[in-house]
Length: 250
Image 1: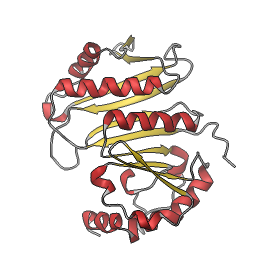
Image 2: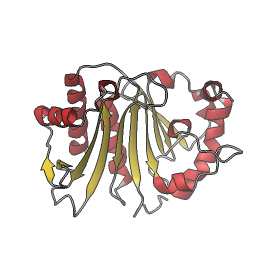
Image 3: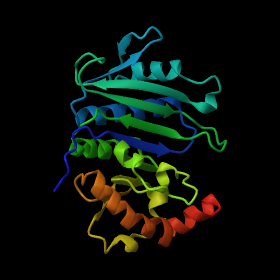
Image 4: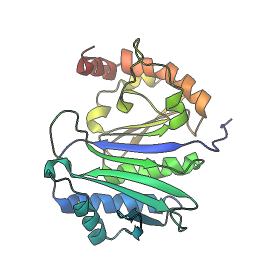
């Protein structure tokens, strides 16, 4: 039985590495992303706040998106732009249902640790998991990330310490309810290690694959059990585990 999701806080995370691309390309990706969100949810408008905390409609028009990206650009162009938008269901952005969308676009620096061109979409608590899944799939198609997931805040807070020292691993070193692996990461997965697990579904998505634990949202407690059963096969026994341990120097 599917656990009641009322109050569950989902975030959609997409990551693609640093890359050099024209601003027009990033604008096109952002427009595709916003359209994907709007077409698969009740979100109707996107706003951005100025320094005086006044909300301005952004819409999905390329010229407005480009102006926002240009305004938020870092002085060092290699660090790109960091933009925060609020998506609403048509109501005042300070009231009703709203989603918070954080974007890093145009980051081209190859300095270790600076991150990538990311999307973090925090959904309103209690959002239907089916809507979260539908938006995630559309967002992956629009952003073409190397990796992505639907994370649940309560699940992250209740995870077992992944190392003896209790140091948490990065999000992309875990399996979540839904995890996306782009083509370069999908090739590292040992899919045979997951074939005999009825709690795991593997589907093609974009140019990569989507790994789903428990099918339709199983609830926090069931998800924890699935993770404890599945992750050792992927991150310890499988090819992905070997490469990750080598990358982490373990």
